[in-house]
Structures are given as C-alpha cells and as structure tokens.
Amino acid sequence: MAYDYEKSIRPGKLPHIWCPGCGHGIIMKGLIRAMDTCELDRTQTAIVSGIGCASRLPGYLDACTLHTAHGRAAAFATGVKMARPDMNVIVVGGDGDGTAIGGNHFIHACRRNIDLTYIVMNNHIYGMTGGQFSPTTPTGAMASTTPYGNPDPTFDISKLAIGAGATFVARTTAYHATQIDKLIAEGIRHKGMAVIEIIDDCPTTYGRRNKFRSVVDMMKRLKDNAVPVAAASKMSPEQLEGKILTGVLFKEERPEYTATYAEVIKKAQGA
Image (cartoon, rainbow, N blue to C red; front, top):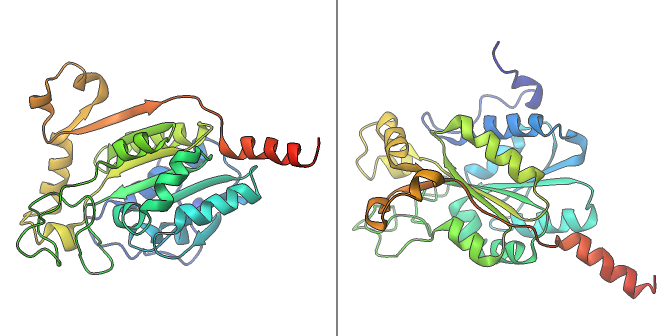
C-alpha cells in the first residue's frame, strides 16, 4: 500500500515549485515519514526555514511553520526553542542559507547544543537566487559567479557541525531515500543539536553549467560515490578521496542548552 503523504500536506499547496529532478521533494517525503515515525504532534512541532529553494519546504507541510529571513533560520529556531522548550523544532535549508549568510547562527546553535534538528539540503549552489557559488560548491565547478571555475576550497558541513559542537551529525544523499527518514528520526529523538546533511542535486543551475547530461547521471554520481561509515573504516584515505561518507558520523551525550538555561533561571530566582 502506498504511503499516505497527502495527510501531511497543506490543502491547495501542490504542485510544488521545485524543478523536475530536484531532490528536495525526496527529502520532504523523508521528513514526513520521520515525523510520523516519531509520532510528532503537528500542533507542537515547529518547522523553520530561511530563504532559498530548500527553505520553501515548510510551506507545504501541515505543521507550525516559520519562513524567515535569509540565513536566519537557526536564530529564529533558537528563539522558538527558548520560548517553548517543550516543542519539537526542526530547521530546514540549503547550503548557502545555512553556511554562508547563516554560518554564524549555524555554528553557535551547534556550540550551544540546543535541541534543534537541522536538515541541511546541500546541492552545492544557490539554486533559487541565481546560481551563485556557495561554500560547498566544488573547487573548479561552474556557477553564475564563477564562470571560469570556482577558486575557493569547500566547506565540509558535517565536519563543521562536529567541530562547532553539535552532538548528533549524520549524512546521506537524495539517492538514498530509505535512509533519509531513519537519520532524521534519529536526529529528532536526540536531545541536543542534531545536524543531518543530505547531499542533493540541482539539475537546473548546477547540473546544466557543469555538463551533467541528465538527472539520472547526477543521481548515479550520488549512488556511486556514497560510502557507509562501516565500509569507510576499512578503506585508505586514498580510496576515500572524493567519496561521500554516509550514516551517523558523530554522536555524544552532552547537556542540552534549554535545560541548562532553565537551571540558570532557577538560580536567578533564588530557587
């Protein structure tokens, strides 16, 4: 029997705006399945985003949603969680929104270990705003602002999240649809900052400029380059060059920020 996604979609919001071949729809369906797996109360779940193709996702979902300013999703989500620690707060956005203009907010949300689930849909480009290169655009790749090839080194978002202090970090790809919901669900259940990076594809502003023949070619690239964590432990650095490490990359238990802050309030009140 087919999965019933319609019950989670706001009436009248479809069809969506994403281009044919974009992986964002795959990720949205994974998020819906994860929310159902975790039995989240939609009236007690806030989904927050900034600006960009990925950030349009909350508008389709029947939950408490907040579409904010460019790069400010983590800041708004922090405010929601501080005001309502009892709510489930999920952040969605792209690589540009989260790690360029929103990079400062991203690293400090990780540092605080606040109980957010941040889904970074990494398609290596600013897709909606003109195809500019982002912090994750591969060195040498073409973008509207790098017509002779991107000269910059790239961010590894998962390593950035771990280094900044997130206590749950995982990665998968849009090809691995059955893994998406499992990792998101594990992130939702984790008490602390959870970052799930999903390597995605933008066939329109990235694929065309970088000479991919089809969406199928782009998806095949994700499939062929993905290496599960367990398999990677048996491979040399040379074998892992250019590969996408998938699965749970890091997990630890550490005091969560809103709980710690509540103790500070008690002290201030003389409790």
